[in-house]
Length: 163
Picture 1 (cartoon, one colour):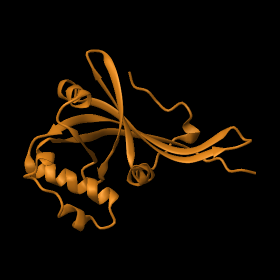
Picture 2 (cartoon, helix red, strand yellow):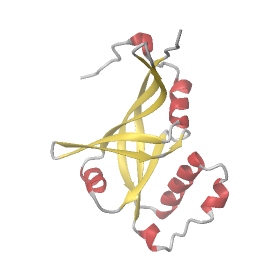
Picture 3 (tube, one colour):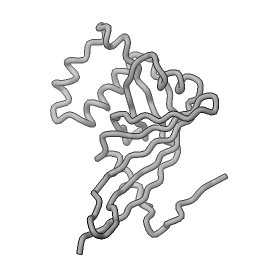
Picture 4 (cartoon, one colour):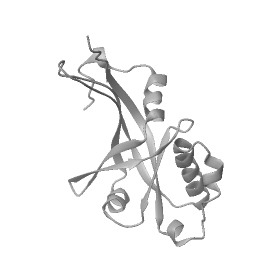
């Protein structure tokens, strides 16, 4: 069944505006499912706008890893919270919801590229931080890299200004 945004007056239709929310964001709330059991987790991410992909890192064991191994289908949301407006009972925000496939990256070259995307998303001096990546360390060996390939992206916004 295809769903639509009920409040079309709040829909973000411009692809550039949707991407701006994702580029500005730092954390995504990710919804996964395994054996009909839902699981959500909040993770920092890096966004590759050219390939329409988000990259995450985490341990090579645990709930998130296990869920992704058995079911690559995922949803995630990024929220640009502009704050609650007192005495208006209103909240100003922009949010983007994405449907896609979450995979575990096995290829070392792609894992390094994923780390680069993450670092580029957060750091003002990414080259300096990339030099610290040690692919021979136990930390690297025990770290999983995940790729979320965006299939659909929708967004909503509500601008509330105090009077």
